Length: 278
Image (cartoon, rainbow, N blue to C red; front, side):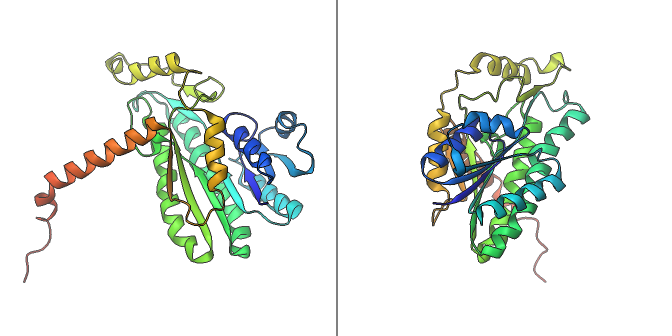
């Protein structure tokens, strides 16, 4: 039995992770903006569930909640940074305010939780941090540019963090889901920029139309994704990156091949830039 800390736990994939962890016999500290929503979602969890209200953009509150969770259960073994928000619009269309709001949650909010949780894991010399990214954290797409950039940032600091904490007995995993049938594309989770530039109708505009069409028809089963995440939580040899969904796997594979081919094509230029031997 392990102790899990899951953010964004009242709905969507976060709630499914909580459900899967509880079903596997783990104890869960679950946070959301409203703790009552978590408790209502899991009325029969008993003492295995401890819920707390947390807006992850509040660093002081994040520190308090993590401290209280560790005190309540005696330890924290797996931290799932799931809370986040989506934003849809061409890069030029997205306002500064909307872009900063996305970064405040997806990047700085995740960092708030990490700064609160890592001292607990370091003291234990054990633990597993699972940072939720997206296929959009590895592959950029028209219309998702600002969202992509927040998740690229999560992947960047997670990859570096993995090197920093590995000697301390802590594992980092970046999870990259594809399209899963959650409420991610609903207005309650996704901010769609109202400023529309006609020149992007066939790129970002097409993405906007696709998002509307596929909402609640996505191929991925969030319960199965949660089961996969709980299965690797605390696992020895857990991957640095885990793609979920055939759609994500295919897009990551396509990008890896494209980057390798482009790199090979321009190898001579890359090798031409050093100082000549003296």
